Structure formats: C-alpha cells, structure tokens
Amino acid sequence: MGNAVMKNVSYIYNAFLWALAIGYMCYGMWSLQMAFNTGYIFYGSFILLALLSCLRGRKEEYGIGIRGTAVSLATVVLAGLLFFGPSKALFTAPAAFVREGIHLNTLPLGTVQAVLVALIVVGFAAVAIDALRHPRPVEVETDPDAARLKKTEKITRWATFAVLAVLIVVVSCVPAIHAEMTRIFALLSSGNVGTVADLIRSYGAAAAVVSFLLMILQSLAAPIPAFLITFANAGVFGWWQGAILSWTSAMAGAAICFWIARALGRDAVAHFVSNTALESVDRFFDRYGKNAILICRLLPFMSFDYVSYAAGLTGMGFVDFMVATGIGQLPATIVYSYVGGMLTGSTKTVVTGLLVAFALFALVVLVRQVFKNRHADLMEDDGQEKAHAEAAAQSE
Image 1 (cartoon, rainbow, N blue to C red):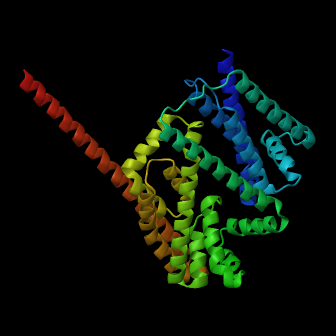
Image 2: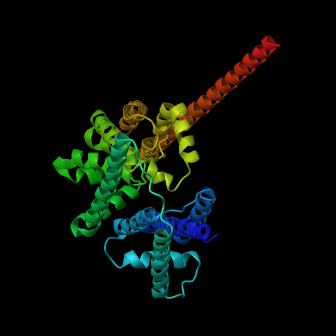
C-alpha cells in the first residue's frame, strides 16, 4: 500500500516539475505571456500530466525513480536558465505565474517562492528516500555483447544530456551570448519576415552561416515556423540560393533532432510513457512513415521538430528518415523561396493563400492515404476469413 502511494507521489511530483518547465517556457516568451494566462497553462499542464502519469503507471510496480526525477529537476533548472538566465527572475517567474493562475495577486511573492522551494525540496527528498528504501532490482545482462551495447547506449545518453546542459548554461550565463540570444529569439518570435531578413543581413559576411545556425536553432528549440527563415533567406540571398541554404540547413536541423532523440533513447522515454504508446508510434511510422514526413513538411504552420524527435525514438532508419525528409521538404522549400524572393506588403495575401493551399493539399493526401490503408486492411481481413472458411469446408 505504501509503495503504491509513493509510486503515485513520484508521478505527481514529476508532473509538477514538468508543468514548471512548461510555465517557464510560456512565461519567458513575451508573445505567449501576453496571449495566455501562464498560470492557467501551468495548472492545466500539471493536472493533465499528473492524471496521465498515474493512469499510465497504475500497473507498474515502481514509479519514476531517483534518476528520472533528477533529470526532471535538472530540466526545470535548465528551462529557467534558458529563458531568464542566472537572475532573480529564475525564482520570481514561477512564483508569479503560480500566483497568477489562482488570482491571488495580493499574496506576497516571497511567500509563494518559499512554498514552491519547499515543495521542490520535500518532493525530491521523498522520492530519494523511497528509492533507498525500495531499490529497483538490478537487471543482470548475461550476453556480453548486449551488456556492452547497453553500456554504450547509457554513456551516449548521459553524454548527450550533459552536452545540451552545458550549451544551455553557457548561453544563459555568459552575458554577451545571453543578450544576443534574447534579441534573436525576440526577433524570430515577431513573426515578421522583414524583421528576420534584417536580422540575417546585420551579420554581413557571416549572414549565410548565421542563417544556417538559425534554422538549426529553430529546429531544436524555437517554436517558430521554419518558413519564416525560408522567406527571409530568399529575400536576402535570392530565391534559388536561399532555397539551397534553407533546404540544407533544415536537413541538418532534422538530423540533429533525430540523433538527439536516438541518443537519449527509448529507455529514457519509457519512464514517462507506456510501451504500448511507443509501439503505437512504431506502427504509425512503419505504416505512414514517409507519407507522414512528407505531409508534415507540407503543413506550413506545423513545427517539424516534433516529427524528427518522434522518428528518432522509433525503429525507423536514419537514411530512410533523411531521404523522406529531403524529398518531403523540397517542394515547399522551392515554392516558399520563390514567393519569398518577391515578398512585399502587397503579396502577403497571396502568401497566406498559398500556405492555406499547401495545408489543404496535405490534408487531402493524408485522408486519402488513411482510407487507402484502411481499405487494404479490410480486404486483407476478408481474404483471411475466406481462406479460413475454405479450410474449414475442406476439413469437413
């Protein structure tokens, strides 16, 4: 009974940490902060994640262990550093959106900070004590090759996490880099093609390199449509040179997202989602993999980053992923670059219509593919039923 309670405590505590990380992200982006009540997002995320975690883990013997909880806590700290740097806002921001969500603005901010710190410390201590009292059994791998492979995967996973953590700390804690990254994020978040083009031009001879890195940055972390940078590249470098730059940089970003997910591994994700969920994602990519990637690349307002990360967690091969990504993004890149090269205030309506047309085309392709595969499944089932009936008749 006690172990079941502590298992749910670990799920709820980790959901609380993940919700804090989401709150940091929303509160740290000015456009999101102005558009939404970050407190509502925090509480909504917390309740939803806690329910999903407890329901998913009801058949599991153990909750999220001390290592998974430590990673969750580190993620919160890194999210705070990424959006606020080593400043007082690292502590005041979560207190502000937690207070904002329950409309208790008269409550002293210092009191809310103290409560949050106490919850974080007590929750982590509870998970750590439970991990010491009820240690997970150590799996002994009898196959030397499998044991070596598992050790290599573990080293790769932690090395990847460490590299990402170091990059975030450097970007957050070095004042000059943090100020420049804050400016870049603000300009990218504006959604204005001319502003992004001016940003790229401001780097002079290094403009192409900066544009390449911006597309990778957009792929890794920034929730911004890649077509903004594609339009800007066409305006700065010309449509066909911009198309080449946009295509190659987007390919590089997709590859990095894929390998980050592959390096972190399914084992890390399996702590937070069920094996059934991972298997369903595998089946989806087995059946719709190339078509899904093609369609997601055609949808102008959809961030492709999530598809790249998801593909890295499946059994899909890297070469297959890159081929599908390259083919899928090529038509949209060419069209966006051609239109972006002549983008002016009078053509914005045309561009909007073009983006909507791409989205509708992608939707039609997706629906057609789903019905086609469903029809094939029904035909296969009918064939199997007829075969069984014929076999039964012959046996009689």
